Image (tube, rainbow, N blue to C red):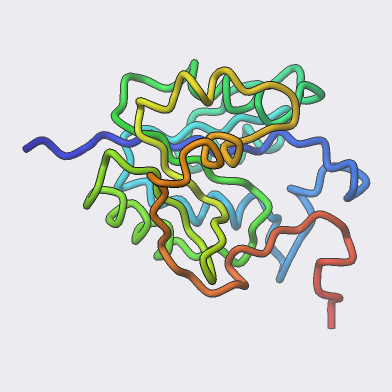
Length: 191
């Protein structure tokens, strides 16, 4: 049996309205959020890694990791547009891993474990979660790509998951790993 090929789409195109600007360059423990996100990608388990962004600085950082940057010229169209751009640029793969760029506590090991967990039941959607609640990243088999492409506005993969709760499998992680940063106040104050 051939191993499933998995592409990764790092969604890093948000406008950071609640943050007041590009939060991906905000630092936590001396490291920008985007670098922490890119370091959480277990690229050795993936066929391709794409980083969809509107920011030249993020595209440059993606290149440092050998990842392909995909330009999002219309971030105002919401996360659905980022998803569509990523899927359009993805080569032929069996599944897509979607990661957000504002979860600074997400561990690379947890993402690698999620991929291994997905491979046990590749017809199912797999996501990290805590206490029965799903979070990001999420892994979708290719059969869900048409539904993901049809999303509109600021609507992400959760909308597809809500339509198919019976095919969702959760990989349990501690709650801190699911924490995202939406406002400057959520960043710890420097000592």
